[in-house]
Length: 144
Image 1 (cartoon, rainbow, N blue to C red):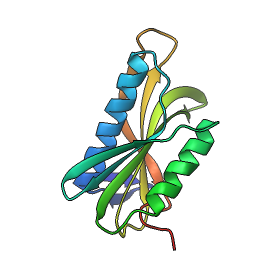
Image 2: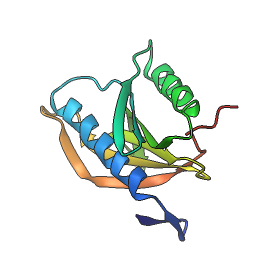
Image 3: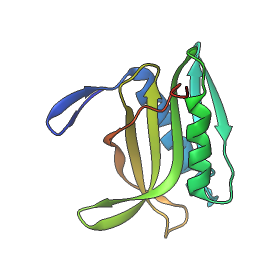
């Protein structure tokens, strides 16, 4: 899945792109049902997907716990995505969004995706399509 960031092509693996789309779909399904989205991790290892949820006192703590969790994953884990409910700002306007941070083993960075939605209506309505919104530090297997 080649995308452009600051006019530079970025090659996102099929495994990361597929996990990110799966995570965004799962997150939106939760929001459409009116439920709060508990941050979660999707892992791919040996062609099998695993999911772990992270409930904590705050959403920020749950995402930190999820990040710490994937940093300790063994090299047999091919790819992962951390997904959570948040907001993004586009041209000065804030939007509710499901965010997914994906990474694979030995990648120089992680990749951030978002799916905007309107949470003021029931069921929550999609706004636009899933989008790549940037890169971040690698997260998978980075613990010493």
